[in-house]
Amino acid sequence: MSTVQRRRVFYIPGYDPIHPRRYRELYRKEGAAQADISDYSVALEPKQTKGTYGWRVKSQIEGGDTTSDIEVLVWADIVRGSMDLGITKTYLLLAKTAWCYIGSGALWRLMKLRKGPVIAALYPVVFLLVQLILSLLAAYGLAKLITLFLPWWTGFAGLAIVPALLNWFKRKDNKFFAYYLMHDYSYSASTKGANPPELEARMAEFTNIIAEALSEDVDEVLVVGHSSGAHLAVSILADLIRDGRVPAKGPTLSFLSLGQVVPMVSFLPEAKRLRRDLNFLCQQTNLSWVDVTAPGDGCAFALCDPVSVSGAAPSEGKQWPLVISAAFTQTLSPERWKELRWKFFRLHFQYLCAFDAPGDYDYFKITAGPQTLGDRFEGRVPSKSRIEAPVNKFTEMAP
Image (cartoon, rainbow, N blue to C red; front, side):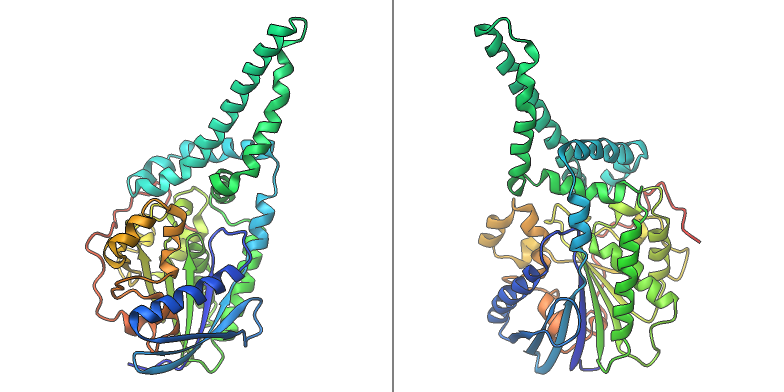
C-alpha cells in the first residue's frame, strides 16, 4: 500500500448553474464537521494550481500528512446558456422531452430500476402543466367576472393574465425547481442522448487538464463525477485512456462517481458514445472506479451498476465499477435523517457532506486522506442490493 502525500482532485459537477465557490464553501464547512466527528484535521488554503477554480487541502488523517489540490471543472456557463429560455420555449421543450422518453420507451425501462429518479424527472413536466392549467383557470374565472359586470366585453379578456401568472411561477422557481429540472432533463433529451457540440468541446478541455496533471509529481489523480457529472467523467476518462495519455509510471488514476444518473442518458437512443465509453472504461486495469449512491437519495439511480443496467457490459472482462452504498439511514443519526429525509435536493449532495457515523465511505478521507481510492476499497465487496439486470432497449455503441 502506497502513501499519498500529494494528490490532484478534479470535481465535475452535475447540471448546476451556480458559481463553483459553493463547492469550496461546502467542502470547508462539511470537512470541518467531519473532522470533528472523526477526529482528524482538514485545513483549506487558497488555490495553488493554475486551474479556473479550486482550493488546496492540507490534512492529517490516519497518521499521514497529505496535500490535495482540488479543482472544479466548470461547465456552469453552458448550463446557464441552456436555461436562458423564455416560457414558451420551455413548454415546447417539455413536449419534446416527454416525447423523447415516452416515445422511445426509455421511461418505462427506467422505472424498472428506480422509481425515485423517474418521479423526479416527471415532476417538472407535471408541475409546469399544473402551472399552465391554474393560469388558464384563473383567466377563465376573470373573464366570467368581467362579463358579469361588463357584458359587452369579450370573454377572451381574461387571457391577458396568463402570461403574468406564468411569469410569477417562473420567478418563484427557486422554491419549485420546475424550470430548473425541466432544463436539466431536456438538455440530454434534446439530442436523444448525444452530447451537444459545446459540451463535447468542454469535455475535451477537461481531458487535457487531467492529462497534464498525470504528468505532474503527484501520487494520485482523482476524478470525482457527481450526478450528471458522472457520465461526463466516464467519457472524459475513456478518451484519456483510449488516446494513451495515462503514463504507465505516472500517478495512480482513480474515479469516484457519486449520486450518478447515468441511465437517464444511456437509455436514450443516441447515447452511443456514452455506452461505448461505459463498455471501455469498465474493462480498464489502469484505474480504480468506485460508484457510491444511496437508496435514500431519490434523485439518483441508487445501487444501479451504470455499466450493466445500460446494456454496455462486455461478455467477459468487466472490472468496474465497485458499487457500494452510502447507506444514509445508517450513517446519519436518526435526528439528522428525520431532518433531511424529504429534502431531496439536499440529500442528493449528502455524498459531499459530513456523516454522523461514517462507514467506509468518507468523502474527505477519499479526497484528502493518505490512501488512494483503490487501496482504500481493496477487498471491499460490492453491495448485495446492487442492480445489474440489463434493461436498456438501446445498446448500440459508437464505433
